[in-house]
Amino acid sequence: MRPVPGWTLITAGTAPILLVGGWTVAALLLGSGYDPATDTISVLASVGEPYRWLMTAAIAGLGVCHVATAVGLRAAPLVGRIALAGAGASAIVLALTPEPHDGASFQHGTVVAVGFSLMALWPALAARRGPAAPWVLRPRTVLLVTLLVLAGAAWFLVELRDHGLVGVAERALCAIQSLWPLVVVASCRRRLAAGLGEWRGVLGERVGHASAPPDEGRIRT
Picture (tube, rainbow, N blue to C red):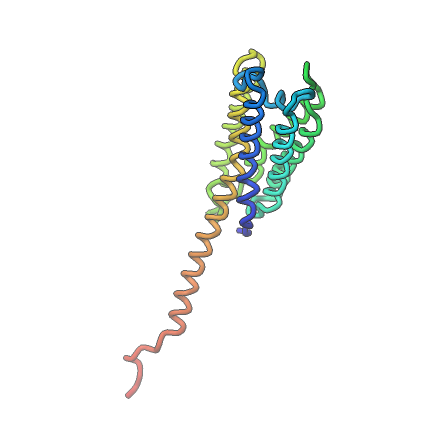
């Protein structure tokens, strides 16, 4: 398995902090005029909001982190890394295409749909087979994660249709999607460290056998 550099822990870990911290602080600053349970995250970054710069910066930072994590996550197949990088790029574009203060924007909605789709697909596209693969990249694990994300997306769409707890559903879905790259990076690095430890142990045993003195019983006197 190809090594995953340590800085990917920083980029993958910063992504959920930026997202959750951004929507939390922005909502607190807006006060009673914003309801996190029923209002979407996009409202915080919509045109005309006084603190839209905060949520916009958080979304853009999230995208940069995903792109950087995809570059460093060399243990995953390339197609999965491309999907993660594409999702990060979509977040950056999303920050540049805010939602109108009143109403909806087709461009904004399209970018959101593309980003969500790529974040839902990248775990499955990053799957690896074989005993050397970390558990987070094995087909059974990525299938469960993909189904969980799709279930979250379905919940969000139902709440959006019924004008219900849209904010709760969206936040739950976004939190899962932003945290998964960190889980993958941490697992890959742990698996690689364990593999190196096993390899060093085997190598040490071989070196020890090679340097051991000959059997005294075989020495002629």
